[in-house]
Image 1 (cartoon, rainbow, N blue to C red):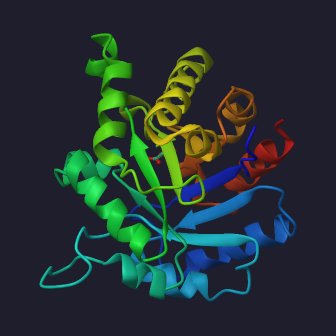
Image 2 (image 1 turned 90 degrees about the vertical axis):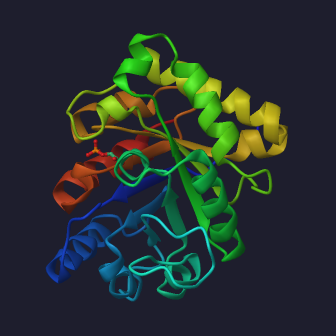
Length: 252
Ligand code: PGA
């Protein structure tokens, strides 16, 4: 089986000004030699500053979104090349808050992913069902549709990460059950293998996201095909994020 290095990603969303960089220094001091990959996606205003911290060997940075075009007249937007130039190595794409609040479609995410990969970034493509979709029994169909529409076929196992984030579990304190997580992660693995080939499918990391905390992380990381997590609220403070990293390092 292909080796998949575990990945723990913090999504700071629209939180954090200059003094938040201290949290990154604390995190780095707590994990000087991590056995998993650590990624923080701060607001764009902090990206260059965070990337310039002397922690780059252990903590990678990423953007939270980029534009589908390479450059041009798009006031207020940020390009993949700008993220890379500011030191980012990853970009989150198609987060449900972008899909819901900015009307992002699978086609947008697909185009953004192509542009981001061309700029040398790794993409963290988010998929996930709403509560209504789950209750209607459509979860796997929704995930399959989002994967088919959002993931370009030029990806490799090295530049694609998929994050399964049930919309109803994000920022709500409601976590998907281990059975629900296992079912969807196994489904995503098989889907990637089928559509992108066994090599890409087996080497792509699949993260769970949605109310991951120190108290539930170890159980989630024990589920098959969970290669790490995308963490929102609990990634803002080193004291909250650090035990989640430790749990991932301890997982088999
Ligand atoms: P949460 O957010 O951990 O605060 O639920 C996760 C996410 O949106 O990536």
